[in-house]
Amino acid sequence: MPKNEMTYCLRIPSRTDNLELIREFVARVARKVGFDEDDVGKIELACDEACSNVIKHAYEQKNGSQSLDVVIRVDLKKLTLIVTDHGKGFDPSKVIVPDMKEYLAQLKVGGLGIYLMRTLMDEVDYDIKPGVRNQVKMVKYLIDKKSSKVVKADRNEE
Amino acid sequence: METFTIQRQDKDELSILNLSGFLDAHTAPELEKQLDQLINEGRSKIIVNFANLNYISSAGLGVFMGKIETVRSMNGDIKMCRMTPKIFRVFDLLGFPTLYDIVQEEEEAVQLFASKERSSRRADDRA
Image (cartoon, rainbow over all chains, first blue to last red; front, side):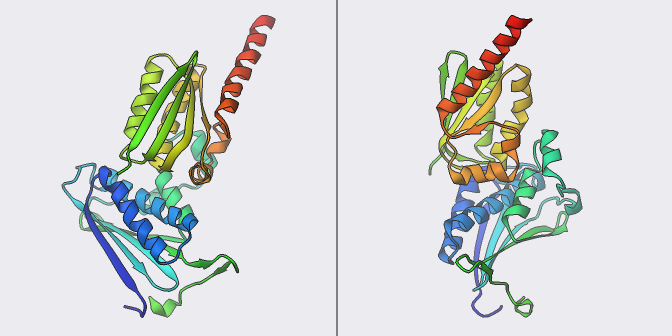
């Protein structure tokens, strides 16, 4: 583990009525490590979208019989949010929403969450092993907004 | 814990929904139920007031997307007002301002419905 890294974990029954609790956990950690309210809101929403997808799709709403894990790793430069489930998984290449305007014109419901996650966070990666373990990993860098400088992490810290 | 509530207010043809609390994948079905109720009653001129809504996720936006076509086919609309910057940002990120009337004050939404009514009446007079 790199120096200065802290890990926060939440294992919680996969139920929509736990979304509020998940958001509170994520928001409090993000606030604690120095993100401003604007970014706290973004991280909170991205996490909600990832967890809502797990509850709705990976577990097909078998409300609460399975759990999902929310792990937050923070260091001096970034926050990494990892949502893990053991449900059926999906093909991440099929969830790319290329053109929001076109998409909206078709008035399609669903799929908005993935688009939001990509927009709100700096990096979004999937690691899908259907039925074994599915992970969504999202990164938000701590930005010094006064100098608008992005504090990028060194690669060798990974 | 703060929940999600919808307070409905009917004024002539208009129905105003005042949302408060958190609108997420857990509470979105309540909003869907309320909109279905209005549609079943034939009430399609809907104003949604977001003044007391603290949070929205895509599940909430999905409800509006799912109902707008039906509402417009009934010659109505869903107009939105009094969003906080935090709520508006989510709508904006997903391109909603191009599809929906989103205004500052509830009165502006009422006026938008009224002016549409006037212009369609003028069109009827000409016919």
